[in-house]
Image (cartoon, rainbow, N blue to C red; front, side, top):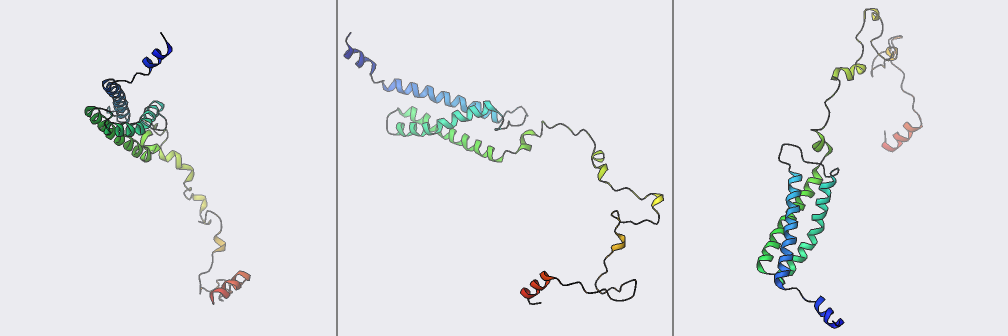
Length: 193
């Protein structure tokens, strides 16, 4: 055989039926992946939906579907131009619509997923009661040996400020005016007081 004969046999253009059957097989593969993804996102057995961040198998299926999206658009355009049969065009449109909806649902799920929504069922029950965890925060109740002692837990009962207009308890006079510092001068200049 000559080289010219071999090259003409290897560059043979596939028939429309062969192209259609190849496209239909590819569409069937995309449909299977979409069904798998949908079943993984919605288990249906009462278990919570898996996290998109931690599930490598689900991420792999989603990655495959995301890679198919631009190819599906190209395929629909080619089919609309008459490169494929009408039946294949219908299937392309159906799969593309379903794929776009599924990818939009995945995006919505990813944006609304919170750590609590996917791990609440797996969280272990608390090991101690609430009282055990806050006992150290509660103040002691007064005991009998505390009679006559201050109620102030910080021991500042001798430094109680006098309210405006109160007489000084020790000498019956009004408390002295507070000392004015540089900041007070600056502030009064700016505010006009």
